[in-house]
Image 1 (cartoon, rainbow, N blue to C red):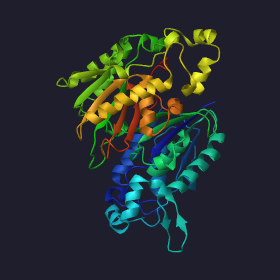
Image 2: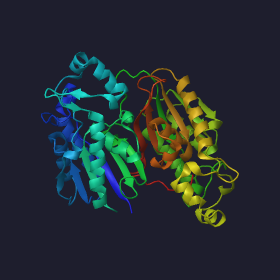
Image 3: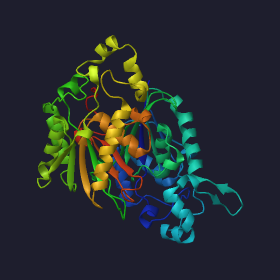
Image 4: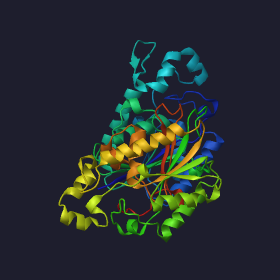
Length: 441
């Protein structure tokens, strides 16, 4: 049983342009550009069939949902719910962010460093805890909605804050991690729930903006650190067949080379200042193909970005693994952090070297530099978990398609927590949904 959720933020609003705090305030309306963005979302989603559509009742989100539905064939009726309203920041609503920073300097600083600790005392003496309240709201939405849509596809149109809280609560992130992810106007995210809230969930993609003519999200203003483009290698024949490859040096197949070329075209106009790859042939060739449009870049190789060693599983199909190691494959698929691969690695081994390699790349980066990093499924998932503030137990929360692109920004510098700007973009390979081979690691 799977529930697929397509999560969209509203289009550009008047308050976005004016750089005003919005929250529950319903005076902000879509700009002409915002309406065009909503129509572009409709085009991107036109091949999907939705069983239900939910929206915030605030007009900037509701109007976005209405424009999207107008562009779809036979859509269901729009349902609005207060549980999809934007975060409640009543003291700030309607104010310019520069005014907020001037009037509430300490609170504003905490908003960016410790958002879960922000409290607002209202004129009537009551108190708001905006992020904590938003997390409760997000959980309430999931609990009331998922059980109604088992094995269905639903569309949700809401806001930056609540969309972040929906993603965060789905994968078990705490309110302290509220600022880990970026959500762009009309960015599209895809989540796959295996059951009810609290059961395993996979983020198939997050904050995809290529349908808007924006290859990848723009960096935040005044970014102090580097931007890293994390790419998974193209398809191999063993990916296609579902064989575990691990550290067996299986090369790209013809389709994998096409995928690498598609990634190269996708990133052709994107600034790349340096490049690093796993030393194995499949990511190395993928990186070389991408860099054909950036011939001045010298590719560096790292052994610590090599794929997980599956030991005695390598070269085998799932049926063979189950026959030789009954129950261990299911354990790997449900509690991966508890599995020691026979004569291979465990996930902590992979985590330690992947994070070490990643941090070395980040520390060597110059401010504002963009670095291409090409590696593998398990390595990329470990890095994404680390970037998001999760543990190895969350390994399956992130999908990595062959040739997919993720974007990680060190907005406040290399010593501060990074921000995941986009994850598992595969639109250059054929649409919003990831259609690459499921394959084995």
